[in-house]
Amino acid sequence: MKINEIGAPIGANRKTKRRGKGSGSGHGKTSCRGRKGAKKRSGRTTRPGFEGGQMQLIRRIPKRGFGIMFKVYNQVVNTESLNRFAANSIVGPAEYKEAGLIGSTKEPVKVLGHGKLEKALTVKAHKFSESAKKLLTAAGAKIEYIKL
Image (tube, rainbow, N blue to C red; front, side, top):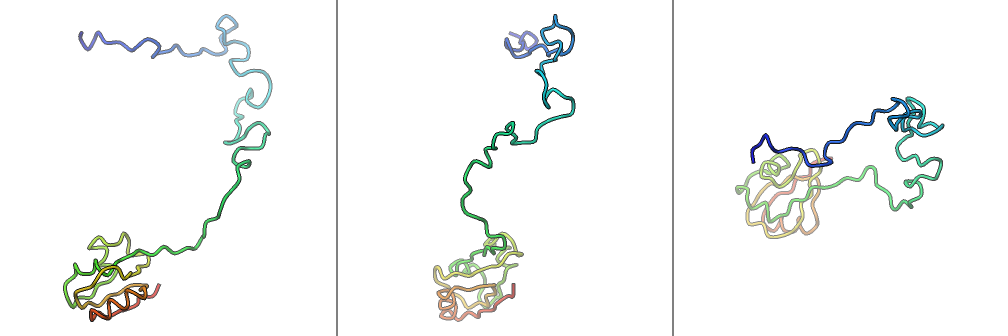
């Protein structure tokens, strides 16, 4: 078998419908559009979701819950992950981003008290949990708040 002997499988290539070419073609007169109505006319289409006057599916299905428009999602940094920074260094959102702890410096950062901190640092963040404050002060770290 050679590459030039391989053909398309049977039924893969269909002949195009030659619409409006007389009644002998089988697609004459109404050109496969049926009789009357908006779909028969040129340039007329129905909008997405339109079901011919029947109540649309999107309006029949019950809606649940709601989305809070101005909800602020905090990026979480655990105290345990602050051990990767050098002792007595100042760490903030830019340093967290560089270390891969957060995704964006534009969104607020919250430090949570998970794990132990073994170094004294100056930690900058928008929010601190109560357990994080206790762990940071116990390790001799300074807490600095950043305004939103």
